[in-house]
Length: 67
Picture: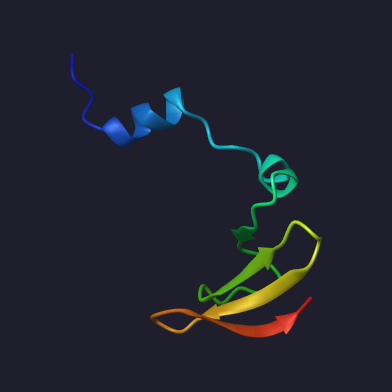
């Protein structure tokens, strides 16, 4: 039987890399933070530990501040 949600099947077969593993490989991660409830705000964390608050402007991201 074919799945009605092939995307979900893909997730089951190819789990995401945990954030710590991505940082260890030198890849920045982005995530929401409850301290900033605006849905246009995200935190970007770099492998060197730098965290930056970004705001989506409709096309790209603007730096709000370094955390």
